Image (tube, rainbow, N blue to C red):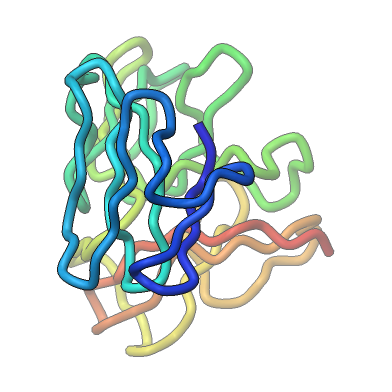
Length: 185
């Protein structure tokens, strides 16, 4: 279906159809107190996204639950990998150390490993939320970036072909993980 936009809560249009006309099996009758209008279970659902923006959403079979905020992705390790390193995915979908000097890894950084794994085992990789490790000594509020061969760094290493921020130091031993889009150098 398409996006439904509203100029006011009492006016909406879908591909030239103006409320309260019917769109498929869903009647569009809007008012200032509208919170949700639904058609039959097989039809689409109209949801209020904000007071002036509505969206038409297809309903269907419930998919599997996704990862919770800060939850770990489990990725098979291509080789033995250490914890607290920046991880990328290779062409086979396996975890490898990310490296800022490898242009083939641009856009493939997943996050930071939270523990070690042997080849073929599942490696837990965190892509957001707070991560703590007693072996770190960050300067609070500093940017944490991808270095070479999985290293977390606060200054870009020589030979880097792209810059990728992976978090921000909250304290000497805690970072707020947040993988940002890469920047070509």
